[in-house]
Image (tube, rainbow, N blue to C red):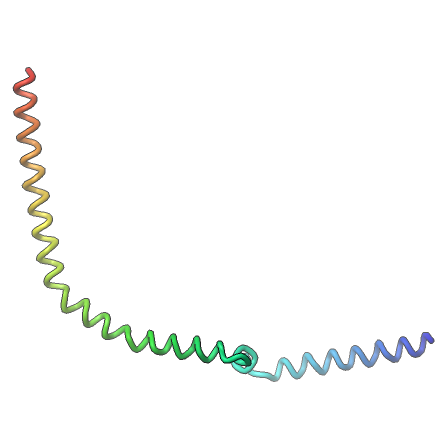
Length: 96
């Protein structure tokens, strides 16, 4: 009985080692793409990479408009701040 158990354990070890060798020889892409999910993810990433340059081009066309808007906003806030300071001075003068 002990010899049979030992024989089965040895066979199990051999089979386990064979499976490890087979898995090590398989390409990772093949392992992950059994259900097609890897290939779908890869395709989606490639599509996104192709769309990036068009997005950058679009942003570059808006760059000058954005600069003008920020300049206008800066001037508006500067004028608003000056107005608030004058207003507070008038209130301060009236209260004293």
